[in-house]
Length: 204
Image 1: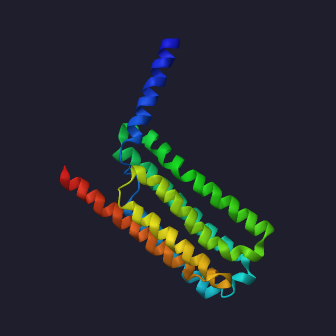
Image 2: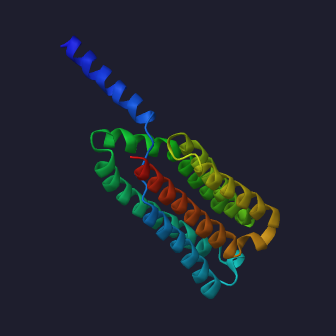
Image 3: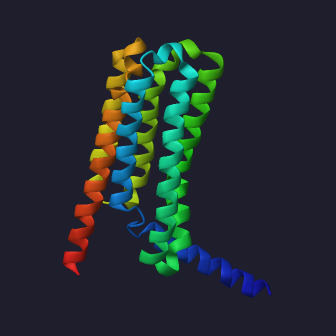
């Protein structure tokens, strides 16, 4: 029985090693482009119905957190189905690896949001920039199993996050301080995945 358990453990380790050396193709370009549209739509909604976000911090946070949750749910659902189709036998390992890379960034963003909203609501203006910087770290962390051009997307989110913080004060709560970076950023990610996937298929 010990030999059997050891063999099963060795097989599992080998599968994880293979997964770590395989380019992840579980993200669908169309789905990521759709999340970019969600960001633009949220920005438009804020511009129309929330002209004073600094005076309604909870509503502002609710709008963007809801957008993030819907986007994450859409990406997660599509990623699971696509990964099982594209990576077949390694699907579970590939999904685990993808989640493992992004989970620390998601956790850090959620905790920072809670701390600012609960204890320093007057400084909530810095959150949009921090969200983008944290998201960039998740992208950079995932780049080792995604197409190399994805580094450009990580750099985009890092630069827009820094620019957003540089705005300082209530200007950083502008709807376009979130809509433009996330809309353009997700379209960039979708474009990179679309063209690199086509190139990979052409090489076969």
